[in-house]
Amino acid sequence: LRLTAGARWALLAGVAFAGDLNLWHLAMRHTSAANATFIVCGLTPVWVAVVSAVLGRRYPPIGWLGQLLGVAGALVLALARGARVGSGEGELLAVGASLSYAAFSLAVVRARRSLGARQALCWMSVGSLACFLLEELWLRLPLAGFSLRAWLALLGLGVLVQLLAWWLINTGLGHLDVALGALALGFQQVATPFLAAWWLAEPLRPLGLAGGAILMLGIYLVALGERTARFTGVRGRSR
Image (cartoon, rainbow, N blue to C red; front, side, top):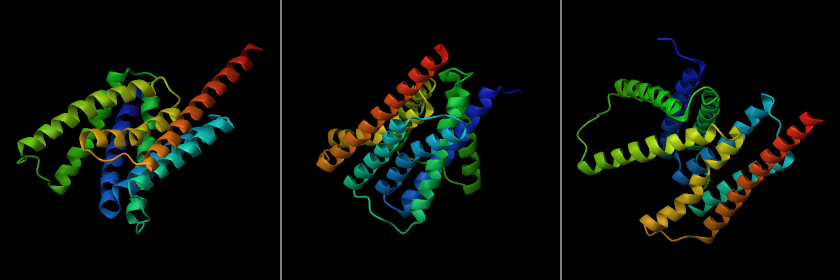
């Protein structure tokens, strides 16, 4: 079987995604979920932007300001959810998860240069499945014996998160600058308090709303910087 370059990048994205999930869940055993989520969602766009800049992508100052606001907004959201300084072990694992998530974002963008969103999702899923199956064989964890409620929850995760949400993410990353796409994925932190208020009757805290507003402003500035850079490039080529 001869794989195209796009399929190989999508497989790599799946491997990186499996690494992100493993490290993220391990991090939450040693630190709070708020800490782990802030580090992963806050640092991932920064790694993506830095790698893109090293590879020759030029971002205007307003784009870097947007990245800083994105990190600040993620921090405020994490503090609203109770994030505190931990022992350091969980935080290091979360940093590793953020690097894996950044690798996933970069690999998906490369895959989407030659693959459609559904093709990229298919190969990405194959890469993730292979990693998780190897992990199951190594750790000998059970794959059966769960309650009906657990199976329904897994089915919902598979259909809504893995199939629908990641198809939309693959579609979006094929049309956006990778740094903007990675930062926009941090919107999940903004949506979480509202979903928790709706489904779990958790109160909306002013600090969380402020953090969400800062993060949204950061996404807007990165998008504005991308538009400015694209417009400047078009003007430069037309002269």
